[in-house]
Amino acid sequence: MKGIEVDLIRAQKVKKILISKGNYNKKYKPFKSRSKIIFPIFSSIKIPNTIIKEFEFEKAKNKPKDFIPKGLNIPSSYDVIGDIIILELNEEQIKQEKEIAQTLLKLHKSINTILKKSGQHTGEFRTQKLTYLAGQKTKETIYKENNTQLKLDVEKIYFSPRLSTERKRIFSQIKKPEKILVMFSGCGPYPMTFSKNTKVKKIIGIEKNPLAHIYAEQNILINKINNVEVICGDVRDIVPKIKEQFDRIVMPLPKDADTFLNLAFMVSKKGTKIHLYDFEHETEFDLVKSKISKEAKKSKIKYEIIEIVKCGQYSPGKFRICADFVIK
Image 1 (cartoon, helix red, strand yellow):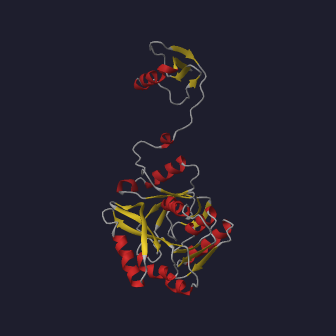
Image 2 (cartoon, rainbow, N blue to C red):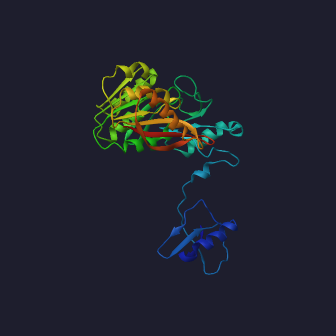
Image 3 (cartoon, rainbow, N blue to C red):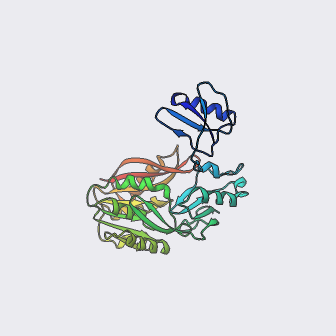
């Protein structure tokens, strides 16, 4: 087939000319040598300082955009948990949801299932209704993060892959064999990543959702961990029975975690670091300081705020934040 040879120094200029005239054959790969490049073309064209020649080109591999039909409005972002994509679709995209799902399966070879959100997180366990769109009919997957594998059902337990960086931020602070308590531990993302990436002495995770607890037990086995204990139950019932104090306490409840601070204070000591999560508007981050102050006064606890960190956007103007503070 026909090609046009040009010096590398003029390659981009010639390529733009070919594209503008509709004479650049994208189905084939250009051939590049040390000083020249040959572009595949449909027909002969006169361009100064170039040579037209016959050449056997290799076929180009399809780029992701080549799979996207014209007019298909694929969301610009979505959650990927293991081999499952979870979409949040607007009214226009819902009309194209099946085509969007099939296209995403073609685009991502490692993805086997496409689901869509069908409501907000609700109920005591903050779970979310998800609707099947394409691929394998399953909502169970294995998610990999920070040297850890987490088996979970994406609909029946609360889990956020968007907190991966936040989990790493915390375990990066663990420099010695600490004893750690994780309240609201779910399927075990915090305990598992802490155990796999630090020399932590002992971790206790407490979770009220029975199914999430079962997955946490499975994840201990999957990750071959021997320093994590998970307990199924309400932290209000479990924590008062714990007869030890912790070096670090993590409280990743999506909402109202501050109402459990009195329990955290019960099993803390001088030097204990507490990570309290909250949702606040970007202009009201100091509200979390007031919440800590209020509970600390009730329990007659002295403390010092270390920092307040943004952990991701929850809604327009509202963010998930983490307040790190230490018991004095």
